[in-house]
Length: 386
Ligand code: SAH
Image (tube, rainbow, N blue to C red):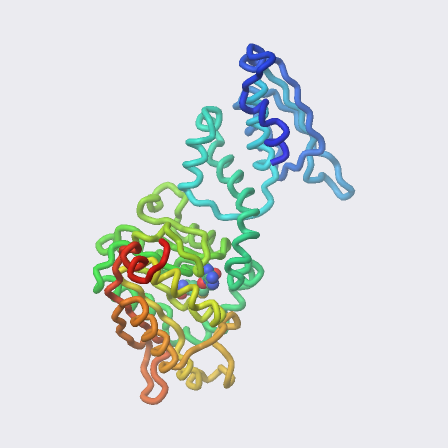
């Protein structure tokens, strides 16, 4: 940003005083030291050499071995505006310390907009992805405030945190049953495009992706970048032979804000997600989901009554440490009914997993149908701004 501000005039390549000089390449030598640059020194060369620079990068020694800084000298015949554009984009690319998930579409957009030098650069994919990651670190700070439930710290530990719920439910093969039931409901509803809200690591997405007969377009949304990275790996999103960007898309977002990016989806599913939000944030989630008016919405959540039947779960303890609540069937029914009335859906309730006569099955599901899928209609009906 500082670079951008300081050199804005120069970067535009327009000079009032010396228009000829700004437009023509001149011999330049640029020294930057210390410059944060992680990874191999070859990377620095592979970034600048294709652009016509002669590169000299020396790693600066730290107290215990090589530091993460280099001393960089670039020389070449360049227009000043080009030289500044190269530095503006490539400096953050060299300091790539964090892992942020970046969507293919964003990469394509940046390459398309990034000027001829980027479009023809052999490392354009890497440059675009890392540049965007760097910007993402700022966006993440904002998003963490919007979706505190999905704080990265929590998700980092997810494998161990998930252990209790998995150990409890594994003997029942509940996770598989849940996904099969949800997919059957989607097929029955005739949904060809599906958004998985709170998709986590993408287990359901992977199944939907494989089912080309029933599903054309699959979108996953989650606030956890970690989870999205794992989902991208599972789906082989960035690999040759993986699904196309038209078929599968991952979105980084918060469930409590209306999101136009998935507005066209026929169906939205929330599989074991609502219980991760504080109860006082649920109305915002409901408004964000049903306010987008998908034709079908499927919600699953634990049935708290069933918990007494888990031999290893102490009384009053939730199945997962991240759960903010677990509802009885009556509590779930009340929530579902209120949504039917307010948003004009019809819901069918059912249970997933082996039923118990007294306590019911481990998971409960609601399938809402009859969504207008025309946000303007329902906004008008409810007197809201779109
Ligand atoms: N549907 C998946 C994951 C369930 S865990 C499955 O069945 O396996 C709940 C998921 O919801 C987590 O991945 C968490 O990151 C996400 N999540 C929780 N609160 C969120 C919010 N406010 N916005 C977006 N995602 C959220």
